[in-house]
Length: 396
Image (cartoon, rainbow, N blue to C red):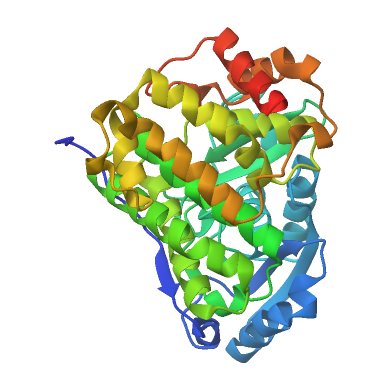
């Protein structure tokens, strides 16, 4: 166990079915909100946007809606959203929806008062790494999906379409949400395939955070707990989206995975997926992670097997009954079983706008734009090894 670490989560997490109703009575961090949500119709169709607007109105709080966010959120929409907030004198931001609008809300909150282009402040890839000097608007997060855990961490991931870079960024404590309302009842409408993709995103946040060299006792606890819940409840939610017990378990698993992100970190699997969806933004993030996962974790289990048995045990494997040399790979077997149980074993990277001939370019992108996650890997892979993992994903 590490004997020295930090644990700081300055977010009021309001968790449980029906808790969205409390938005109308809780103390909020401003008088006029920019509500950031997606370009899709679900938040309108299921009444979530009206629910939030009505709660704000009951508070005497005005609101403006910015509803252009894409599944892989872009730099252009961050800049446009910040301008809308300035033009309307908004003094706080609400992210409503999945990880994309909440991440975008964080980035918009940075740019309302800070000059220049958002990419000026990105510290990796082609970003200029300028310090954020002006106040960041406070943020309220209201997730309607269970996957990213962004409601419990300060990180935001935005794509620069011009440079084909998808890079994470964040400030502590400024881009932690002030309040996160995690209400599983808002997640009952998620289609089965998106439930699967989002649940596996949370799973990989946990698994990567458990393997990261910066892991610590708190992150280990959250990570193994999240892995256990997702293994047990994700197949149930995929099969029956109205299963509130399963939705509640997955909502907490996702939030726990966000806590993993706050106390540990993702590693290079996420860098590699960001390259995939930067090259082809039609790839859902969770789907990209699934398609990379078996070759990626097989490679890591072969190179640094020590932490894999505990993850297999969290997935329900009786690792103590196995020969010691088989215990790390039991995680890979269990992972393949979980992927099959949620009907994602048919995902094929060749069905997207990518080709095997791009593997070297994908590796270059991953190891440049998000190089800092490779630094946290338990095994320091070479570019050739990174290319080989991409190639195996194409061959699967």
